[in-house]
Image (cartoon, rainbow, N blue to C red; front, side, top):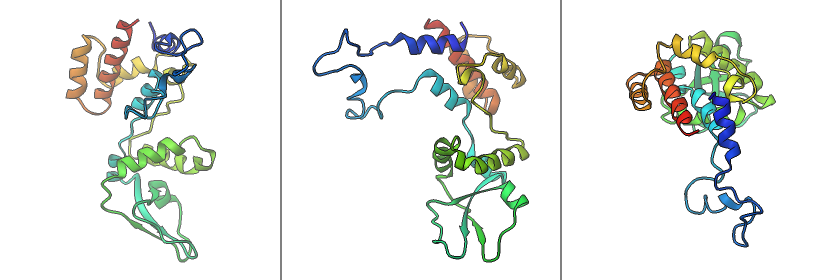
Length: 215
C-alpha cells in the first residue's frame, strides 16, 4: 500500500467520529473533539497523517541556517518608524545583505544571541510561507538557504498533498545513503543513530512500514 492510500484510508476510517447514528444530547454531531482542549490534551482536532508527514519532511534547522549566514535575526531601523524589538526581530537573509542596499538613515544590527530563534522562525514560517504578501521574503529565504547548500524542500508535491504520485521519496532514501530494509524498530534505531537527511529518511521508512502494518 502506498503512502497516499494509507493516508486516505486513515482519513476515511472515521474512528471515533460522532455521526447522526451515534450522537447524543451531550455529544452532538462533530463533537468528538469538544473536550480535548478543556482536558489539556491539545488544541482540538488532531493532525492527520498527511499533515504530520508534511511537517516532518519540511523540518528546517533555522539555527544552522543562522550559523551559515543564510537567515538571521536583525534589528532594522528606519527613519520615521517605531524602533525594532529584540523579541520580534527582522528576518534578514543572505539575499538582503548581498543583493540589496540600505537607504539613507537605515541601519541593520545583528542579534548575536537569540536562544529561541528556532521556535521564532518555525512559527513565522508556518504562519507566513503561503501568504501572498510574504512571498518576497519566503523566496529570499529559499534562495539564501540554497546558496549555503541547505535548500528548503517544497512540500506541496508528491505524497504531501495527496494528489501527485511519484517515486521521489524512495529515490531520496537511496541518495541519502539510507535503506528501508529491516524491521520498524531497527529503522527507528538507525534514525536516532544518524543525523541530517540520512536520519530523516530512516525515520520516514519506519513510519511507512508502521503504517502498512496498520492496514
